[in-house]
Image (tube, rainbow, N blue to C red; front, side, top):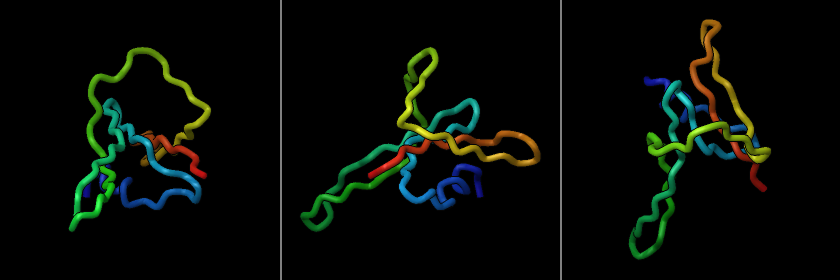
Length: 84
């Protein structure tokens, strides 16, 4: 199982949704795709490698990092957003 799959399977804290995952040096963004299933619109969330990231520092009080550490090394950082 890849690290990305392991992170996707980890339950999120109550009241949060995932906005992105950093597997240094790559950023994966959560995207929404709308599809029609039997005439009904269904929104499916997917995680895709982000392109054209802005340069410089990014800060927002809306987001909370969740860090995955293995053998004393930071392996991944999730970017979580409080909902509700």
